[in-house]
Image (cartoon, rainbow, N blue to C red):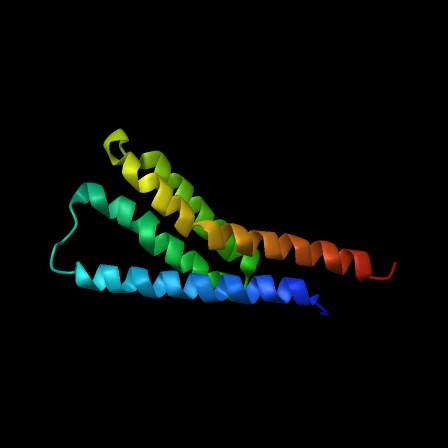
Length: 119
């Protein structure tokens, strides 16, 4: 598969940013290990940061699947937040940008390959 240089740069930039986010989230979860989550927080933690990070790890191999997992987890997380937690919306949304870029890369790669394929 011959991927244009611009798409390779997009993929690797997204991978690096996603890796940094996963490492940051891992440090935050490890640092907060002394405080067990309440039953209400378990679902939220499963979506963000755990689900988002799982999506980013999967996206290294399958960008469309992993990006979709991470974006879906962030959207569901934001939908389940209470109105008192609106201060988190901007930060969480920004952490979802790599998921959108993984999806964009996958779609552009498919389009590029379809345009190059004989037939």
